[in-house]
Length: 48
Image (cartoon, rainbow, N blue to C red):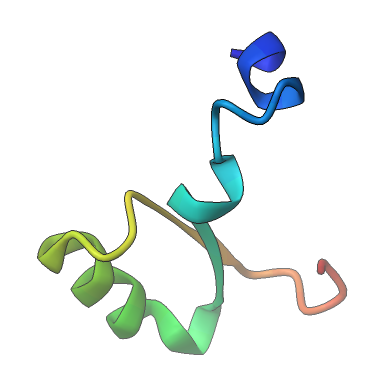
């Protein structure tokens, strides 16, 4: 997968999205409706 990503064939930035903890409902909604494959909830406010 790393080789695919490095060669531009695995668009991880299009399937992963970071959400702040207060956006958890939006993350769940996006996951359920398929607009985001991997929502990541960030609880540490200093991250990203």
